[in-house]
Image (cartoon, rainbow, N blue to C red):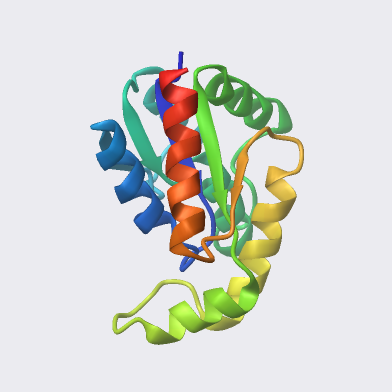
Length: 162
């Protein structure tokens, strides 16, 4: 039984749009897991274990990617990272929103607000998310069209409603 969904990907990848559509289609809540100080492994275990009927915006993959880019390294040991992957997959779905670099840059430039990530960092973030997704069962979403978004929502509904 699916109890939680995690949507991951770099900034400007279509995560928020997908999250809104999925949570509304399911009638679930959503929660942002952007970085917070503290022991990251304990934080994510607590969040994942206590979550039911929730769609997460970001999770331990973002923590690892942006930790590597901005905070001096991955906050998880390989065993901790593997355990978080295992636990989340057990009763969850992982979606990686990974559009082409040109799409990320175009969306970045169209935003009228300050962003933490720099335009020059988008390609690296995308590459790191691709690397982290390699050995983890997930749904790959390029956020290239509304038809693809509709297909993603239908796929998630089918998996949740089994």
